[in-house]
Image (cartoon, rainbow over all chains, first blue to last red; front, side):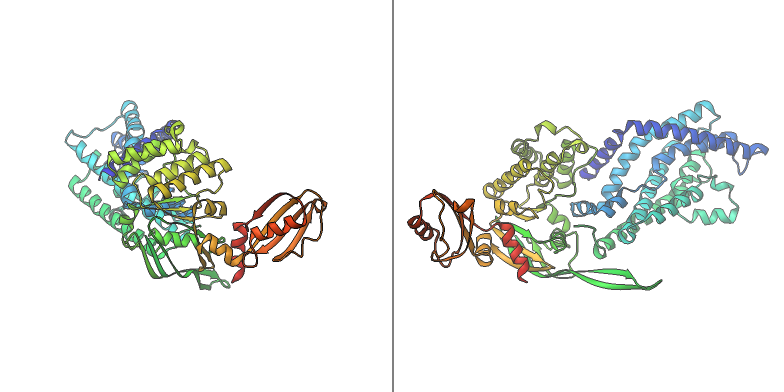
Amino acid sequence: MRAYTRLALAGFRRYSTYRQAMVAGMATNIAFGLLRMAVLVAAIGQGPIAGYDVAATATYVWLGQGLMAFVLLYSDKQLSDRIRSGDVVIDLYRPWHLQLALLAEDVGRAGYAAVVRLVPPVAFGAVFFPFRWPSAGTLPLFAVSAVLALVISFGMRFLVNATTFWLLDNRGVHGLYMSCTWVLCGLAVPIAFFPDWARDILWSTPFPAIFQAPIDVFLEQGAPGTILVNQAFWAVVVLVAGHLVLNRAVRKVVVQGG
Amino acid sequence: MIEVRELRREFTLSTKVGRFRREKRTVLAVDAVSFDVAAGEAVGYVGPNGAGKSTTIKMLTGVLVPTSGHVRVSGVDPSRGRRELARRIGVVFGQRSQLWWDLPLRDSFDLLRAIYRVSRGDYEARLRECVELLDLGPFLDTPVRQLSLGQRMRGEVTAALLHGPELLVLDEPTIGLDLESKERLREFLADLNTQRGTTLLLTTHDLDDIERLCPRLVVIDRGTVLADGPLDELRAEVAPERVLVVDLEKPAEGLDDLPGVTATRTELNGLRHHLTFRRADTTAAALISAVAARAEVHDLVVVEPEIDDVVRRLYARR
């Protein structure tokens, strides 16, 4: 356990060395937030849609801008690159559970992102726009939901990356995953904007659990218990799937290069 | 320490045939390889590119599962007890890094201490020794991405030794290093083997590594073991000729009819003679006195066949 704690700390430090990247990322993030605000506020100009008034919309957008970086909505390619180059050999022979080790590092990364990428856009939104703060009792539930979202996002990214063991070039899978998250997790528009039948289908996939779930908990929409159980379920599913996939990869697959 | 019996590993390649059909082809990367390494030995595992060296190393470390055959490293079946084995052996891949790219070298060591669960006392003693012998002090706090290759390799070797492994597997450890860095690393590894009794298994294309470090050589080509034995014996077996090079005071001719000489070459207008002879036919001493009887000798040297030559002949023998 100590090893994984240390790995999480190392993840935090690794990302904290890239200050300029952080500043650039934050600037882009806020610019994009303003764009999304403009589009959605125009859409609800006739009156609230599915319970989203201006305050709820602002909260959805700015919290979302922060969560996007915290859970790392877009797939990363670290493991994928290591599989392609064969460097994964190093990761495979260490006395650790590779998936847990990567999760620990990702938790460290997210810890850093929480400070520099989650707080600033939320503060920006809260200062310049009408913002809906939840009751104090909801905040711990939101924290749990955000961490579960991070774990699910990690698990999905791990699976996307692991396809490289078989495909060698997983850019297609990667691109597909990116477009899926854009539409299916509630980033383009809130899941509540979809018609009833589509909403049910979406909530039976892991995508809303990465992004819409913590936002719903924060906005106090829906029963938080149900949302958290849904997230916990998906967290277990993607982690177990990742574990099985990794085991199979190690048994069956060529490890690249001399 | 290492026990390998009839080890085989196949890979399936699929190639495109026509528009839609794909043909599966099985490639045998390692075919019935057997060898043993005793505790405290230093063994060179040599072969051309694609011979199956790295595949064997991957099976020894548990990263790849053998198709068939028997492997025990340190009493552990690598693919089943991968994690247990990792705590007992160290691995250095010359072309890959096990250090954390964006963190200072010291932080990587610290992380490895946690991952391998090394007690603080042992860790500090081992690190202090490596820092001293490999002169890591000046760059311990430098991020790994800023290290030179020579510095990084010293860091890699240290990283592999922090948990006090009984066996150190090195996959091309000196690749890309300059002469001085190579020599320094070899010296360190030689001491590790002789003073500490750490078993070494080394793959390399730089046969000087073998000459300096490994009394024993296992030569592999196309997945099978071509030769296994002490370097000197292999040399006597496949390259039995030695060359006596004599420099004379005055040019002379007609040294080619000396007993035991199989070939001659003359340089510097007859001042320098290369006399090739076989160990089995005559001794260097007998030949030297025979030459001295004919002409006044200024200087002489006996040249053993180069290790490259030995290995080339081993490859050619199959």
